[in-house]
Image 1 (cartoon, rainbow, N blue to C red):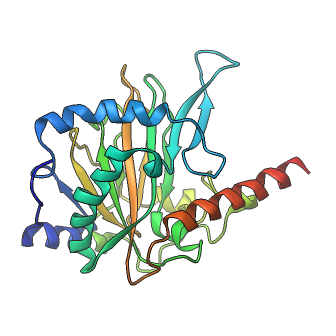
Image 2 (image 1 turned 180 degrees about the vertical axis):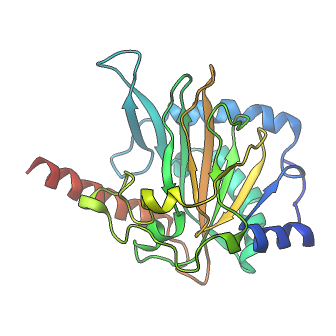
Length: 266
């Protein structure tokens, strides 16, 4: 990897004004950007863990009524050295500059949007869902584009600048029906509220890093292109706000999903 990337005063101002900033250069070499695809394939092949790390999520495959396909892998950092180094050596130094103190990895996920209809994500904020764990309260997300993120393949749609967002955003206050993974989770933006917001597409190139705060409204539509689109997300908290929460978050989510599964079967 290349040397430490310092945020410019303009990039720090962009984050404060828009609620996000795209880091387009100075983090990875061209060879490392080209290698992101291999790293993502390796994450997809990590076996699920009984301890709750490397959690796999699946969706129905519309090409076959009885088939499912991988759409997300969570908590893979403990089992993947190279992605762990990306977090430690590249992402933490960047996010720490925005926090003004050391950033700590809270959670991570790698999303797979399959070609010709891979599912999108409903409007939401990252911060409230993470804060509902009681482990930390202030968050910054780093989106790493594994593939080019385009309008056709369902790139992120956002609302900015920050003064375009409500001071007290309307959201789902608790997990609807106990489900922590659907559009009823904490931080989901009600559909009527989302319809009144001004959304715009935010394309990114492969290897770009998009940093955004915990109350940054975002969503994504389905992939309508003929190639899959992969995106890694890393959520961070400040060290003074909860410390190292990564393992505690994995345990919390495993217990929450277990309780929801049992209640759904009863």
